[in-house]
Image (cartoon, rainbow, N blue to C red; front, top):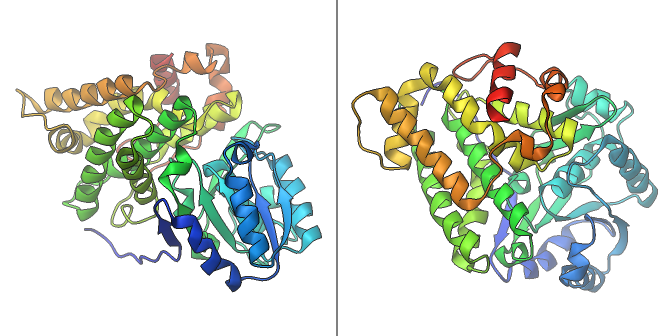
Length: 387
């Protein structure tokens, strides 16, 4: 482990098929007004909405609603939500949904009482909140983003063609999150698989960095092996509780800041993927899967030893004649797993054409903490190889 770090995570998790009952323990900690935030209404179809409303009423809460949160929450929706939150003077934002809903709730929590334009303040200038923050609670219905136990909040600005994530500090983490794997059963297969790869990508982004003997790497290797195993089961049997619960737990630990400790981390796949999402509005996890192999093949020579370790410790590949052959065998095994679970393998499937490359490259933030700092020409080559 290299460097110095501080680890703190204030989110309290309630996990399991009876976890919603614990909402009764959390609600008395907050004031009377609750803003219920959710997406397109699937929670009404599966009955979760009625269960949550009943618990809120039993605890004497006054309920306000902010619904229609889209898969890639927009800045326009954020502005609308800020007005709604101020109007109801909410004491708690209760997000019921997947990562986009939780991301939106956190962005809302820091934006409603900002005296500056929140997009400019948090997503262009990356300032930290210096105003009132409304606490957030979470009831998770889709896994992948890890948003239930971190400070990340991704917002899209269609007018500027940008999709940007701001990772806020402990004061913006959800105060509590309720994780019932059964709530993920009704998620369509496409979205389930996208969430699985989003989880894998979170781990890979942190794993493929640094060259020291790092405890975080060993943890991540275990998480990846669990995810690979459980994903194969879940795509064949989506109602397999054990597989879905393992996937949910892995997704949380993939991005709750633990495995990043002692690591430089990379995040360039996410930077390119988010740029693709800003241009196409494609599903986030699929933007990552479509470019990952091309990206990792490009940077592999610069972090060869780690790619060899990945092949041997995650996919249990024996040493081949050269390090390069072993590393490539690891990426081939990753590709085979991706195809087996059914993720998108090419950006053309997401509607990307060559005439979009310039906009995608323009919207891509270039990080300097991975094995290779990309040039614009590198990004073009990745996109071309991913078509």
